[in-house]
Length: 453
Image 1 (cartoon, rainbow, N blue to C red):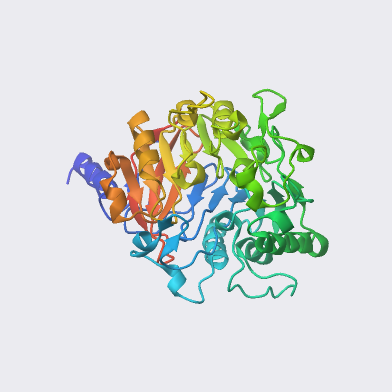
Image 2 (tube, one colour; image 1 turned 90 degrees about the horizontal axis):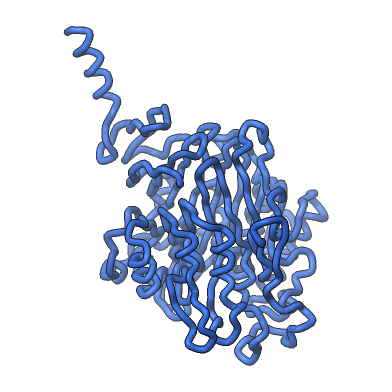
């Protein structure tokens, strides 16, 4: 065999495309990584990982930053097995995998186990930042059927509490610490007040007894969240806090308060929302951030929405936060893609204001964290996909009804964990779909290589 033939044989044996079961050479990465049918290859220093962890019960995003700093945004929930959930069912998405039929299943433990596998890659056993975007059960956990903490009998292991019990946390952030009194006393007035009380009890117990540092998420800050291990090695990395409780970054060094002050809100409980035009709904108060690494940008808006803008223009908080963020590469869909979110041009007939968040963000990849058959709603999906026909869409859970949506061919990965892996330096990235029901993180599909904007 000639030297040339030998070299060609060696090259071809190590390079299979993404439809094969062998190693895949990722252009620009300089490394050979495991392909379809194998567990996701380990994160390596310099890469940025964004893991949209799927439990079918809520929303959870785990990030490994370029130097191994680790961050968790929201901790899923604990939603009943099948049947009606609000205005939609979840029996369709649960036909594939329904973890809640196992009475021992806890979303918090499932997430903790997933994170533990990632920590083996980084060698970092701490969640350096834990951010709860807002106080709805599918983002911080339900208390129903949850066991009492082994550390304290004062709270049960709703998902956030279980994470706090399992791992050291460097900095804990949410939209209400320490008083939890906007837009009213959340521990007594919220529709899920019992869950909020348990959550607050767990957080404050860890502050008092385990040295947890907790703060309110600071809008406009670009240093509250930063690299903790090798910051000088990655100076082109930044997390920009954009908004919380309607206070929105102005794009420079300040913020603009758009919501009524606490003293201007005359209600005391969530049930009064319908009778008040001056009270923000919980989703409006979401923490919003933009993460940047080199040319790569990621937008996480919690449950940002424009619901209510027909009565008050400030109730569209989604458009101004999107305008502040600007064009991004990857966007977690606001509020799971339900009605009155991910604005694609709806105009209020009363105020004349247009909800146009997607016109500012223009993501290359739109990732939808779904836990009911109506995530995303058909009009929202079709509106966004028509506005952005070149955008690729990834959905953690789908059902047969979604396959009838117009432009459903834009879905490039679904039914599993969705992982965005950004190459060292941030110039390019790929999106992986991983198995979820077996706990093995097996690669089901790999996207093309995207070039960061």
